[in-house]
Image (cartoon, rainbow, N blue to C red; front, side, top):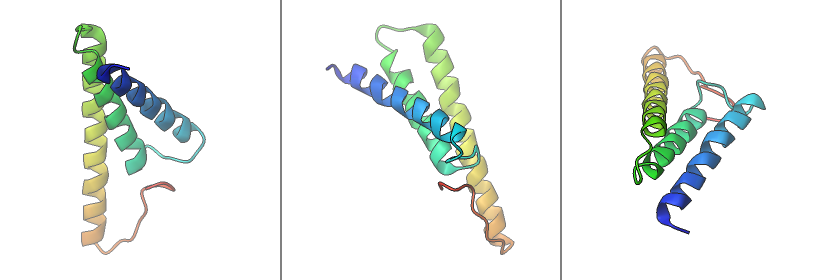
Length: 95
């Protein structure tokens, strides 16, 4: 199996897994696990469509990756703020 194909398969499993776990209530949108699975999955699919270039999918997955990274950053900032305030919170059942 070519490397790009393996990367795209892993990316697909990560994206679908994140979505499935979210719908099963194992993740929330505020969980690191959910956001990182989206980032890794979308980044893998972004990589896999570079050669030959599929512009529509490339742009979609690149933006999906960036949105996931924003989600990770927001969770990190909230946790940092809560820690400074002395608040103990969990971001989800599956952090």
